Length: 165
Image (cartoon, rainbow, N blue to C red; front, side, top):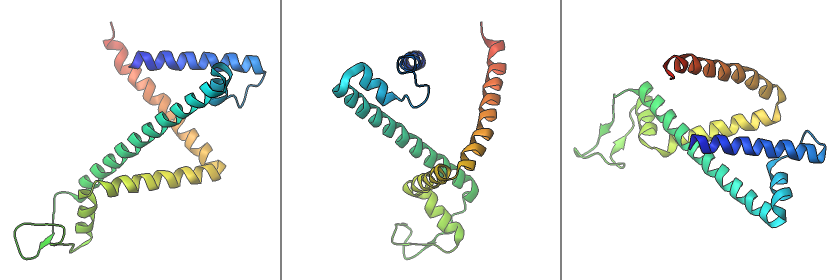
């Protein structure tokens, strides 16, 4: 899979470079224009729909995994203290659970897999909306994450190179 993705990325970048040379434009040459120019109008639309579908699926997976990671973080914060008051019987159901403190509400949030995912999606959506409206946010995030990514890559190379044959 890694080799396929690498080869696909290299071929796509080669096609984009060729398209820039054909049109004379360095900016604003996107994948949809590339699809249309090489595959025709109907092929470009089909490829665009496929790209949209794959992008939404990948985004859904990232949001789901981010929500699961947020839930795990909340579990570490909340801990294993239950503090739920049982009313009536030893079997606890949704109707018999009465939250008695903020910790119980946090525990309820952690136990429901939908809430951390929705919270993570809301937080990321709010951040992306703010970043699209405020140019300084984009610059600040880029100036932070570019060196962090390069340092992470350098650290991975430093760890991996001595073990490579």
